[in-house]
Image (cartoon, rainbow, N blue to C red; front, top):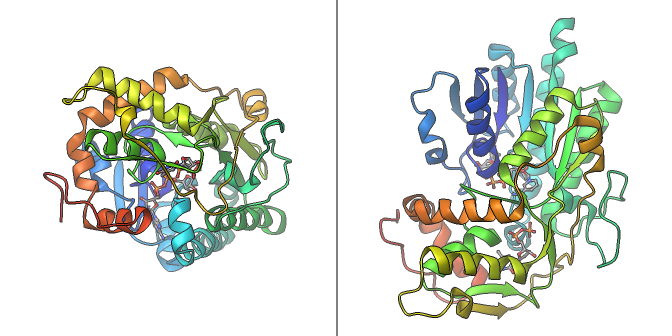
Length: 363
Ligand code: NAD
Ligand code: TYD
């Protein structure tokens, strides 16, 4: 079996669902269920004996060690993190705690477990660390895309905490021979993404008749990857990744935020035309820029494509349409996750009174 951390979040839950759709190998899913973790994402696995959910914190080293001793997973796939840049600007401490200390505790538990294990376990075990392209900092418009040897230069508390975790993971390989593989992926989109991140927030606000906030001039560029393509890259890293290596993962799909938002509005105009007429694009509003906002991210995914034979299955056109359709068809999921805590956050981030509870939402 494999041990997944953060498997009730956006990418983790897509990973678990996709894994069990293609393998019979069981999954233990360790997640503390922050605001971003949601067991509803895994509702289809409720009666599936291959999935065991453990409600717990990756910072609890004793718990992690017990799980490793009891279940002897062949790998840890480490997703658990605080993941939202804007939240890291308002409150960095949780990012230091979970992303740095949490990764440290996991590494320590894995080290203790391997020290008492036989060679068969030592030789087959993998620690797959899921990280982000944001550790490389920002690019100018004409700079080449990030390769794995790009200097690490994080600019937000989120990316700094992920970079620190990446460094710890790297050091455990070199110092303790921990069998680690790290992936650094670009922006993901797809089902089950919490509506604080750009794409689900725009869809949610558009359908709710609210403003669509564009930070600064909206010309910041991100390299968007459909979430299942990220999951297949992590599987490739697990099964074929070279120990101690990092792999950049991206969709070769750079888009300025304005283009992403306009694309979402066009698809929504087709799927759910506004009752009042006009386009959802009429709801676009320029707002104050994010402090320290990285201008451009772009991934050079040559290494993982060449060495591990991975490539994305979705184009942006197919992935984004699927995604909008999913949100339109799963409005109950959106209502449930946009709970009281979410409304408090939106009030803090975008100013003014927190929006009212959506119909059917938890209060
Ligand atoms: P998410 O915020 O949607 O989910 C994070 C999950 O981790 C949640 O289920 C949460 O409950 C859990 N968690 C948080 N703290 C925990 C703790 N102390 N113990 C146990 N569980 C805890 O994040 P995501 O977007 O799914 O990202 C998953 C990973 O992928 C993160 O490490 C992130 O840095 C990385 N990543 C994300 C993206 C992206 O575009 N979302 C891109 C590249 C890399
Ligand atoms: P986000 O989804 O938060 O991902 P990240 O900051 O990790 O790249 O944001 C994606 C881009 O969209 C980023 O340039 C910030 C911008 N953005 C907005 O313009 N408005 C918003 O309301 C949000 C959440 C993000």
